[in-house]
Picture 1 (cartoon, rainbow, N blue to C red):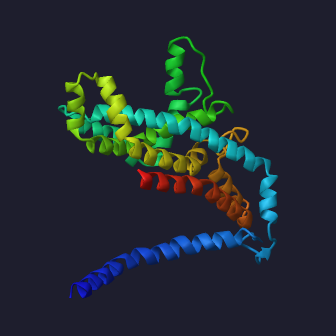
Picture 2 (picture 1 turned 135 degrees about the vertical axis):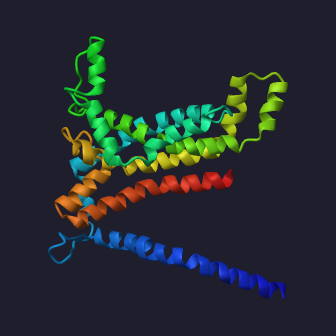
Picture 3 (picture 1 turned 120 degrees about the vertical axis):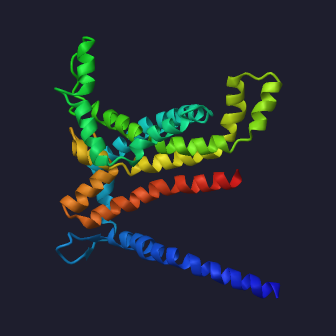
Amino acid sequence: MNTLSELRKSRESYYFLAPSFIIFLVFGLSVLVANVVLSFYSWSALTEPRFIGLDNYRRLFHDAVFRKALVNTLYYCALYVVPSLIISVLLAFVLNKKLKGMNLFRSIFYLPVITSYVIVVILWQWIYDADIGLLNSILNKIGIASVPWLLSPKLALPSLVLMSIWKNVGYTIVIFLAGFQQIDVALHEAARVEGATEWQVFRHITLPLLRPTTLFSTVMLIIWSFQMFVQPYMMTHGGPARSTTTLVYYLYETGFQYFDLGYASTMSVVMLIMVLPIIILQSKLLRAR
């Protein structure tokens, strides 16, 4: 009797999972398979697809713009991930304090996350404007000449990184805040009774217990870095001198401006191959944890 009941419950659970599984098959797995198949073809969306084998992959290997986009993406990732983690941990530590009005501050830090990218871009374009921008106005008042933030090949990408951190750090703050709240307060109290300072408690108890949260956040930030598109698309159009052309922006440019869809599919497959090991590593580490 118990076996029949368990089978019935198991069958019912599959019924509830079926809609999500069907959506994944239609909009996820099938699109992925079609993308891989298309990477072996030359197709402009206006002509019949023509099978060319590995020619797209050979072309990608010798594509100087793709190499530049890859370097830009890795540079963006390096500038974006570590500061985002440090800022998120420190602010989450402060916001975890039970003080009056703390909920208001939590909402303020999360507000940029839910703000439209259009509004954020308009705001930061004004901040970075070479002539009347807020940042240059502040620099001028302290005797420093105006800086062409978005017009300089050396400064354009770091400028986008700064905007991205401001826009998205609220999300990782929430993740770390949840991680802080999962830590047993008794561990901190026991350490203080033994004479540990606040820094020792934070370093030897809090940070080690935050490792799963840190791992998850790190992987998510890396994946978001590889997906970076809106910022160069709306603010710099990949320039100046390709200094802000990222992998996804170059993929968009190839597929939807030049209509070289087979080659664009090849880029997406290569990007998946680069990101997949990170996801697998995260899964194994979390399972081991």
